[in-house]
Length: 67
Image 1: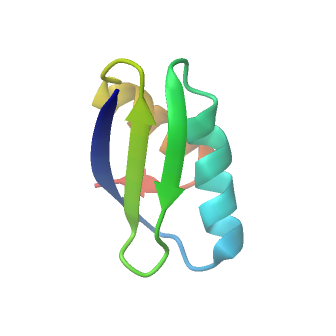
Image 2: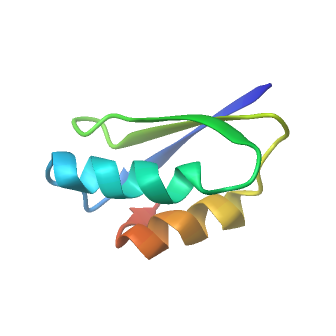
Image 3: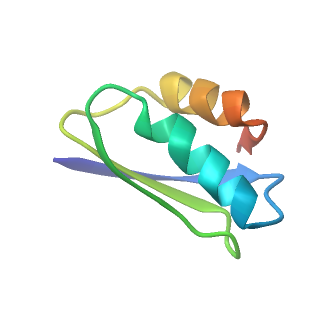
């Protein structure tokens, strides 16, 4: 298991959190996703390390930005 933490910008409500969570959970190998609205932290747990570009693309698909 590996865990990586990123910062997501542009989230303003729980719907934003749900959107990001849903998109990132679809990445192959991801076993857990935690999003903290107050800090913007996105914590991704996966079987193998996930390329930042793939996480960024999922966050972009949700309508937000990985910084």
